[in-house]
Length: 558
Image 1 (cartoon, rainbow, N blue to C red):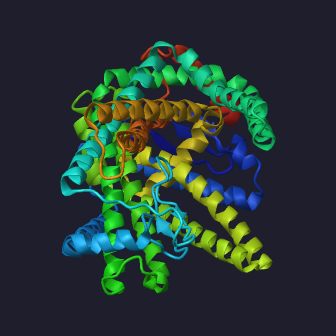
Image 2 (tube, rainbow, N blue to C red):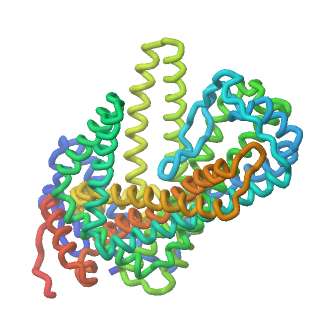
Image 3 (tube, rainbow, N blue to C red):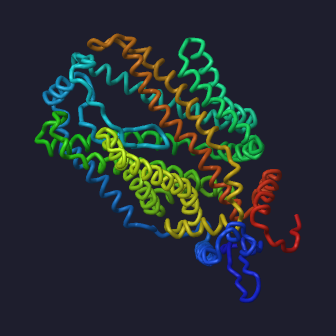
C-alpha cells in the first residue's frame, strides 16, 4: 500500500493509469479530450511524470530528507540579516531626540515618502501590498503628541494589553465558530452565505433613507448582485455543509491545533514590525541619519525590496501553519495516531521548510512585480500618459490573475508536501496527476468554504475588538492631550487588527482541513467511508465519476 499510483501503459490498447487500485482511462479524461492532439501528448506526459513521483514517494515515510534546502538557508540568512540590521541601528531608531524631531517635523502625520511604495499590512490573506502615502499639505491635520514618560509608558502597557486581549478574543471566537460549525453546520453555512448580501442591502436602504442616493444605490446594487450569485450557488450548499461537518469533527478531535494558530498570530505582527524597523534603519543610513525629510526619494527601489521581504516572511509564517494543519488532518484521515501535532510541526518547520520558502518566495516575487506595475500605472495616471496607464493596467490584471491561480494551486501542493514530503516541484507534479486522475476539479469547484471562513474572521475580529476595548476600559487613563475615550478608541482599533490576524489564523484551520482531507480522499477514497461519512463519500465519488469516467473493476465487498 506504499505505492498508491502505478502506471500501466500497453501499446495498442487504451491508455490507463491505476489510481488506488481503480483504473482510469486517460482517453476518457475530460481535460485531455478537450485539448488538441499535440497538447494531449504533453499533458499525458505530465500526468505520467506526476504518477512516477507518487509511486516513488510513499505517504508518511518514516524518514524524510530536508528537500529544497538551499531556499530555507536563503530565507534564514535574510531573517538574520534583518535582525542584525535592526539591532545595529537600534540606537539611531529609538534615540529620543531624533524621534522627537521626526514627530515634530511630520506634524503628527506618517513620515512622507513622496509617493514611494511602502510595505503596509492589509490584513490576513493578503499581507504586504504596496500603498502610497499621500504627502498632503504640510500643515494639515497637525497634532501635538506631547506626553510625559510616565504617561507614554502607561499608554504602551495599555495598548499592549489591548493587543493581547484582542488576539486572544479573536482566536477564541474563531475556535468557537468552528465548533458551532460542527454542531449546526447547516445554519452556519446558510448564515455565512446570506448574511453579507443582506447587510449590504440593509445598509443601502438606510443610506437611501438618509438622503445619500449614490452610496445607497451602489450598496443596493452590490448587495443584490451578491445575493443573485449566492442563489446561483445554492446547489453547492448541501455539499459544503457535509464538508464543513467533516472538517469540524476532525478539528474537535485535534483541538491542540489552536496552539499553532496562537503562535502564527503572534509571529505575523512581529515580522511586520521587524521589517518596518529594518526599512526605517536602511533609510536612516542611506540618508545620513535623517528620515522623513524628503531625501529618501532617490531610494525608491528600497521600498519594493522590503515589500518583497515582508510578503515572503508573512507568507512563510502562514504556510508553515498551513502545512502543520494539513499534516494533522491527514494523519487523522489515515489514523496515524502517534503524535500528529508534533510530527506535523516537524515536517512544516524542518523537512519541508525549504519547499515552503521556495513556493512562498515565488508568490512574493509575483506580488512585488504587481506592486511595481501598479506604481508605474499610478505615476502614468498622474502624468496624464494614457497609453502607458492602459498598458500598465493590462499587465497588472494579467499578473494578478497568474498570482491568484498560483497561490490557490500552491495551497494544494503544500498539502502534498505534508503528506509525502517531496520537493515543491515534485509535489506540484504529483498534485496535478492526482487531481486529473481522481477527478478533483469538479469537487474543488463546488466548495463554498470561503464565505464561512470570511464571516468567522469578521466574527472573531469584532469580538476581539470588544475584548480589547473592555481591557482598555478597566485601566485606561488620559495620555497627554489624548482623553480617556481617545485611548480606549485607539486600543479598540489595535485590538481589532490583532483579532483579525489571530482570527484568520484560527479560521485557516477550516480551509487547510478541507484541502487536506479532500487530498487524502483522492489518495484513498474508501477511508472516508470507513470513518462514517458515507453520504459525503458517495457525493465525492459521483462528482469524480461524472468528470473522469472511472473504469470499474470488480465490485468491492463491504
